[in-house]
Amino acid sequence: MFAIPGKQAVTMTEAAARQIARLMQKDGHKGLRIGVKKGGCAGMEYTMEYAAEIAPMDEVVEQDGARVMIAPMAQMFLFGTQIDYQTSLLESGFKFNNPNVEDACGCGESIKFKDVEELSAARGGK
Image 1 (cartoon, rainbow, N blue to C red):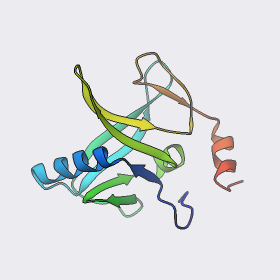
Image 2: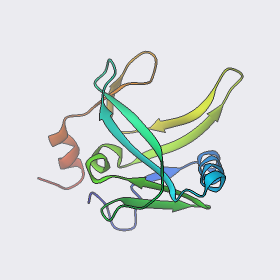
Image 3: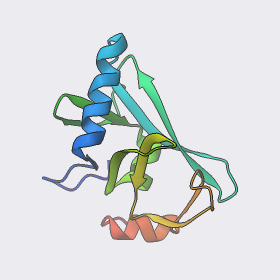
Image 4: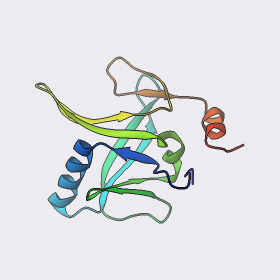
């Protein structure tokens, strides 16, 4: 939908790809579906869920045995995002390095995206 020929919609670090591949093997999932939804103090939140099937309009990104699906509604917001998996003494989890984010709340759970028209124009839309 918002693809640029020869460029994946999202990329994964080696750590993220390893973790996603592990999660897929655990219960035989087809991959992880990532998206966005309204919520949080900055207006939007990322979503991640196991996917049992690949929907016909999903953007599918595969790397090193890991598969991520992006629903059509979220593709514009996630294009160009790097997914990372970080582990520290206190926590571990996925981190989204997203060039489309304009602002984020202090806790990092909620984001605000650039204007939709600006995102569309950056992707070659009208």
